[in-house]
Amino acid sequence: MSRKGQKALKELKQNTEIKLKKADKGSFTVVMEKNDKIREGKIQIDDHNNSRPLAKPMVRETHGEALLLIAEMHHGNHIDYMTKEWLTQTPNPPRIPQFYILTKIHKPIITGRPIISGCGGPTEKISSFVDSLLQPISKSQESFLKDTTDFVKFIAKTRVKTTLFVTMDVTSLYTTIPQEEGIDTICKAYDNFYKESPPIPTYYLR
View 1 (cartoon, rainbow, N blue to C red):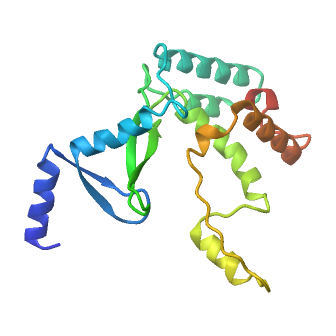
View 2 (cartoon, rainbow, N blue to C red):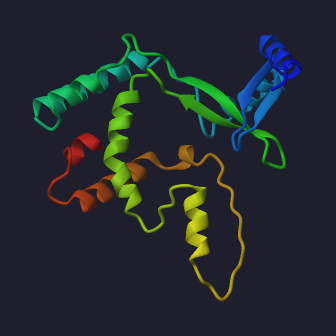
């Protein structure tokens, strides 16, 4: 980058009325006025079909529940001491998960994708632990695609006589999954995959 470019970038970073953030897709940077960025976020927060304000803070309560669950799993010999120590490495008090927006510049109408950063939050470690249990199950599914490159390789070796190109867009994917039904489906897949030797009892996964 030229000196002039570096100077321009530095000035943008120092401008408190401008927000620099990566785009939702691709290696692009979005330069947006602060008020527009806030407005973009408020559209997501004010949509109570997908989110709603808490009656009271729940970070400490959630942290306590997570610690209790970890202690029970260790006491029942379902996880070893080192796993227990790693799972409990959460700041005390834990960090409140932060909400921010990545702008979808690839859409006809520019909108924001809501992101909740749980780094340092009450469920960060235990969520990673659950992910490690479920990743092998996910990869075993016939419909599993790792990424775009994986999809391109799949398409390249797939031969079809008749094709119909269809594009679909899902709105608020994760918040529209019924929680109880989602949990039941995951637990059933967990039992089927691990058979008689699950890493931890299904009760604790649920």
